[in-house]
Image 1: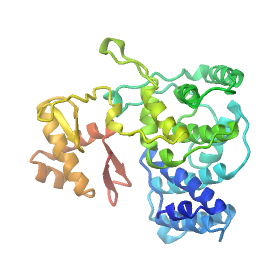
Image 2 (image 1 turned 30 degrees about the horizontal axis):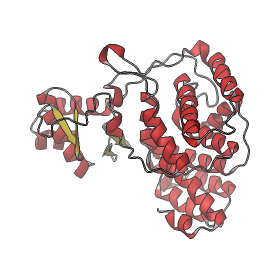
Image 3 (image 1 turned 120 degrees about the horizontal axis):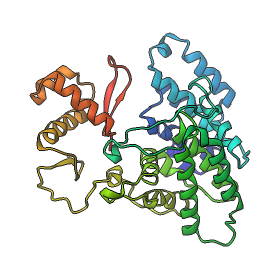
Image 4 (image 1 turned 120 degrees about the vertical axis):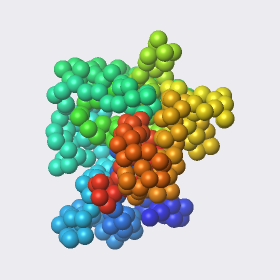
Length: 355
């Protein structure tokens, strides 16, 4: 469903509602989720003011009690529910700059969907990241979440944006948002929560926010947050907000910086030889990924799945020329690196190659 027609037409109410829905739906890509066609049709009716948000909620509840809705997978149900909640939140002209507001956003987005919605996590975590070659960001210790959030919010509250130019605004906002994300207050749903909070915060400051980056590049946004919080000095990798700043420059300054996920990989090289046998061709660029043997099988798997997303392990083994056990290992590795997503259940789902 393309909502651009409402934005192009420029009718204020419809334009704003369409932009909010675009952001809400686009942000689901952060966790590899896609909404149902029913949600898209319902959103269109809301944009056209034929139904209210309350009616959206009622329809979605009824849909998932129906025979068709019960056949949707759990990820689609989450995408539908959270999309509707994000669109509603973005439509509200209310905001309080505080950790309590951050927790409220998380609760409103994920209540009934994720455990402990709106409550801080009680365990320490780590997550394998594709852009870090499987390494993890060092997240805030669970016993320091509250104190660290209070400190970061107080520092930001004391800062005055009066009179500073947009490039400095971008740098400041990038550092604040990346810091909040690194604290990772909640077990899951942090990136979507941080994105919604950031949009509402910027609007509250009076800045005009271009929703296009969140609509089209939410996965880049998450990877940029990862790069802003990871360093490995022996390997020459330092924390950098440069990628996140490009995102926010597009968001706030209307620039058209190229936002490519592959550029964020810690071993991305612009001068990588195109004929190198130690590189994976991915789109029109190349990226180092390891041994020749693994590269060749992984490359074949990605290429095949890009054209045959419903292929089974057995089909892949037959077409690639390796065992099913080897295919499973490669699939697990590609998923861990973020190059491949599984959408839906093992039966009836499909693969998605991440661009």
